[in-house]
Length: 362
Picture (cartoon, rainbow, N blue to C red):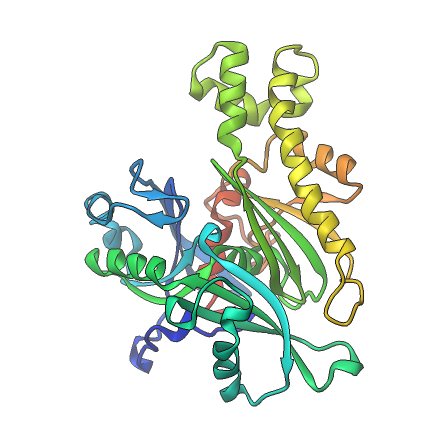
């Protein structure tokens, strides 16, 4: 994946091009990761998370900058740096795979800018965009470029810029979260095709990665909180206890409980169906040449709710496709040589932040 700054909002001078922290901003939390060089790779120097006050960010849109600033005024001290690579929410983003005549690199951005409104419901003045080039594997297409175009509303990006400026953080790059997540969970250089399912608190991100580039991305309003609330109601327990039961017992432990299993299945089955729709779309729709997309080889699960017992097996069975938990350290350092301070299950929450931190050094 290329290193271009999202829309090149402001290219930093060379003396500022130092290592940056990955900052993953969502409706409910801000997570950060700092990496430092180590023998045979990197290691996590620091990581952490803070809750986002309710109502300050909704569906990826900043609603209350003053409230955010008040909550995160000391974040710079936690990060240990002012320089950050920042995620942008999938809910507000458009990712489009398209083909253009082969151009010189300096001409690509201008060419995409001219045809932007043909592919997304935003004019050039209303949008900021970046792009990734896919390696062209088809000899018939040598006169063309395959491009993954990423677009965000300018007004949304400007709100994030205003927030970061007020808490004294300097964004080196903005990146749609699916792209950062892919950088963390897919081994560098792997040219395969994968589906990434990021199971969050209130939503799930579903993306397809082809030749190390995100070419399809969507977000569905099904998250781990729905499962927790369903368990809470079925078992008449606290939210905290329902959270513990969800992760520790999950689908596997719930089979022996005639209250727990239906409570979990009511949500997980809906999630499986949504993943299945995206899986089917990819395999049944043709590309611009009328040819089939390369088949998805594997489903990779990440996010805070991914480690729920039995979820991977259930999705594998229901979708007839291997579904496995991500290794978010795969591009940092071999786990045979390095035991990070963060445990495996918790690390799945930091996939996006890790991918952002890897952006400048991978």
